[in-house]
Length: 113
Length: 115
Image (cartoon, rainbow over all chains, first blue to last red):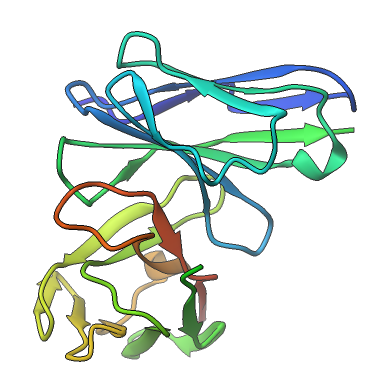
């Protein structure tokens, strides 16, 4: 079956611009997660959705970061006024309800110039 | 917050050798997960551990959930070239009563196989 998909696979933008990153989870998975991975580091948790609502957004670094999941399936991570320090791989994962094992997408590589 | 410490940071081994790596935490985890990440890809789940003392195998991979619930080990037997990659341990970021939480990851162990 289809795994988690993310688009775009690569995004280059200029400092100060707005970007949207999309995640399409595994069909039927109710939980969706966003992570950020910097070079040489493990993924760092950003936000977690259970259905349409954000159950835990404690990992979002500041108010320039926002995520939505309006219909409980596809999610969009939005970054306003991008900064060079936002450059990283943004990973999305999903899991079935109540499960602790998460399945990751290939990530979006964001480069802010 | 919770931190996971992985060692070694990197390993240079010969094809056919056995590999052992570990992950420790200052706090208790109720679930331990081991992932492998190839360049340009997302992490792929290898093994999940749910009970203290549990020993689980997946082909040539074997992982154990430490009795203290503060550590876990991953072993790879008879390494082959496709084992090259970064291995991460991970666990739920907060105490979980069985539900789903964001994961805390270690910094990874880089496995490099010398020809």
